[in-house]
Image (cartoon, protein in one colour):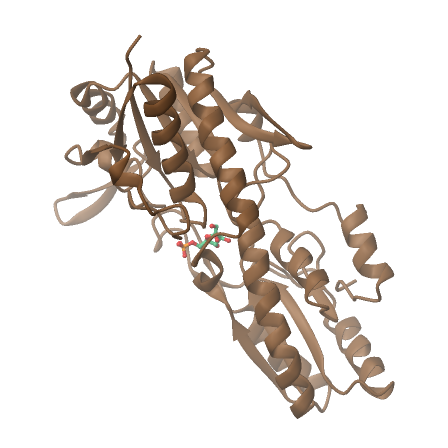
Length: 362
Ligand code: F6P
């Protein structure tokens, strides 16, 4: 039976989004003969407008290797708490009825939501309101439950690792401490994986509160043993023991989500105070989200996109595509959004880092 499938990309962008869109369009058209429409700028495209366009084979040509998303995305448009202007003030209103109406107006039968925790929570609620939804997990942070891996993470780790390789040579030439701030507001997967891959000396993650005195002692010991430079990788959400995250903008000023950033500067100043070593800061920021997806992410995204189409054919709604081991499977969206997948401070990856002599802040 012919179907119209709508797809949107929500939340912060990440490498591999275009590869999912392409896979959905190709599998749906070539194998099923369905119609595909792309919703623009995440759920915002179903609130305003609607803003959407037809997607055909020609429209997804040449996008597999492109970062970002051809549909646009937004991480500030929850239709259940949508910012609207009332008498010159921005207030949050439930505009979910608009979304339901626009979804019907487009003539779509199914909605594929490619997103992280925030977008999938919204998807779940629309599932409960009657839209047949399928989730596809994305985030460079890799902190979604229900799946071993999200696409985008591998590429982000590659980007950070390459940066650490570059920073090593300059740090060594100048006997400096380089403090490198990476993304990861709640989970330290990027910091931990890239820190191990890039041979960091200190890795600080949100799951393990750090002690500055211990960090300084580790850097001092390294320096005294002849390595007069150090590389510190710190996740933006890392916190000192007994302290708080460093926030640039409060949730109130930033559409309901705290804007993090600044921990590397804070830490570099503290290291300069406790050690007589020049400490410099590199904030990798959105560089980690950009660029061409690694081959692994192109394959994972393609598998996820094809699986999403198969799930529609099988009528598996309210579910999310996931990877368990080497198998692509489906899980309940509810299982994925019931909390974040965090690094286990006593787990194998942290133990590996420590066995390698990497200091993890404790
Ligand atoms: O994609 C997730 C993430 O990378 C977080 O680690 C980070 O805090 C956030 O996105 C920042 O998003 P933006 O700057 O686009 O609001």
